[in-house]
Image 1 (tube, helix red, strand yellow):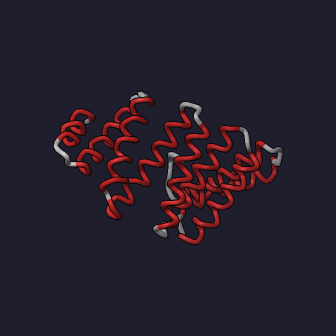
Image 2: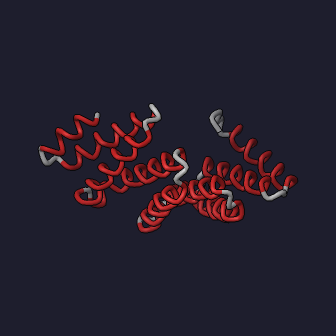
Length: 179
């Protein structure tokens, strides 16, 4: 996919190049070629920013999320938080509550990796509020799980257990085996 992206880039077909660079990023991410994934995603984001307009909104959200996830894998938590913050800002500007909740959850995870469990809890609680406003069931459950994780890490085991049970019940109802 990266070569196809290069082909479209040379032809000046910026949005097709961005699409193929996103594919190359996903492929690299799936193979744990993380530095390559970041490079492809950044190229895609550049073209989406420069040539995409409002039509590229969903693609940009996905790229920011994926850039943050790969940065977390590389223990580049500050970079991950920057990508997730950019995702959150874009989601807020476009009124996308589900994407806002996803960004808050992602921020909570990154803060947890950094060991800042209070910030993680605060972000997870914000995610829950936004997710409930959107009636986004999966994001609600994920925010509860993340709150439970943060509360466990700060020594609030009873609260963590209650949140974990609630998240598990929600995921069971949603038939979401992955979570």
